[in-house]
Amino acid sequence: MKKVLLFWVLLVLNLSAQAQCAMCKAAAETDLEGGQGVADGLNEGILYLMAFPYLLIGGVAFMWYRHQKQKTHD
Image (cartoon, rainbow, N blue to C red; front, side, top):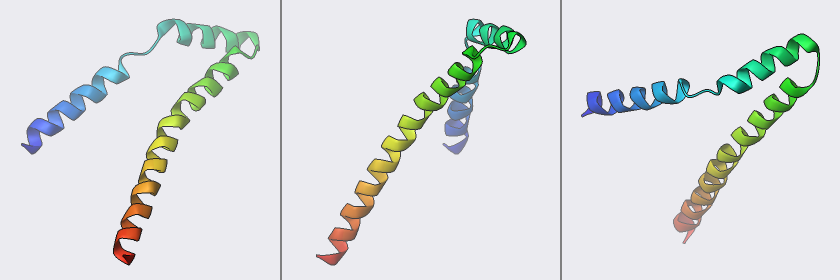
């Protein structure tokens, strides 16, 4: 069972690593050569999109922790 789960996790991680936008990469590379700020905007956008899943998971974990703590005090 563990081998099957590991296989699927590695398969999903591999597929997501190959699904990168070639146009975004090309635009960022040419922008860095020209000295403009499009690459900075792309990087900030990526960080912005990446932050929300972590905030949601953290919020759910905090609510779960608080709920568990209240159950032990009752």
